[in-house]
Length: 322
Ligand code: UFG
Image 1 (cartoon, rainbow, N blue to C red):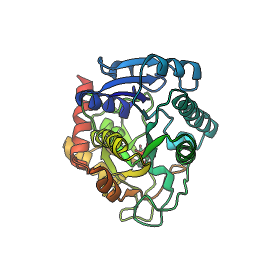
Image 2: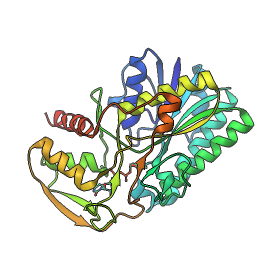
Image 3: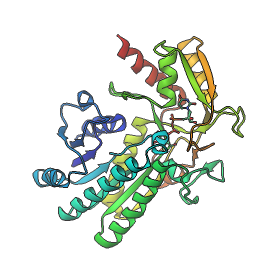
Image 4: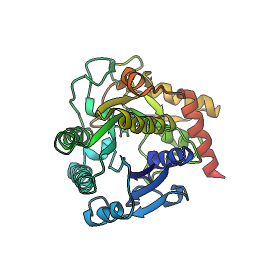
């Protein structure tokens, strides 16, 4: 099959490109390289450096290659930044998707796997959320993902574009020689590792007065290769079933910020400084997945636990120092 990955030079996109190539598929990547890394896109993938907001260029890609399905990952994805510059998120995330969907309609491509997010739930009432839980994003980033899921439903009803929207919880870890390499890192695991490796003097913990067991926020970390695997399973599902689905991707296990810090310290066998600051705007308290639907519909289960996630990320960061 020939797959288009939008945002295919990003952290998750490069892992997905490797995963699909290893499974004998052809990969076309579209990325504007604003946040992505050209050097991490596998050689075997065809890279188009362009912006999804540039509709003419997107159409060109579809006219050059017969695309079987699209994996739509391209988006701004910082919760923190979305609360400071909301227009940037509404503009890019929504308009890019409208252009992509319109192009899919024009070129009769009927299959889309979308990178959604647990951020659509906001602060759920239950400890672990299933896909039926009410959606109430508490940050602009999550709001853009909710709007896009609603758009996908309309493109399904009107144009019969079938989709699987994968609501990722916290993607982490490294594989295929690719890890989290961002110009401005904001994520907990890479920042804790950088602190352990003495690239940073201290790690900031945003809030220690949450109503949780140790006062720090709880997230559900899932390995990126497990996430990539779910993408291919989603495509295979749509080929057989032609029914759109919305599916959580998480491990089902919550880890607090303090627990992650302790695990990183243990893996590095060292201590490092922590500074407590105020809560980050838009941060949910607890986000943990119920992944029963992924198991039932896709036959998906996370294969790598939190220790493997942190170890793989740690080894990758260390390899970057040499
Ligand atoms: N945190 C710290 N210190 C840091 C960085 C993060 O205490 O230096 C805390 C955050 O406040 C949060 C937790 O660690 O409580 C996790 O933060 P991340 O920035 O690693 O990840 P987020 O949960 O904010 O967001 C990630 C993705 C989003 C996605 C969300 C879904 O970046 O795209 O997971 O759960 F929507």
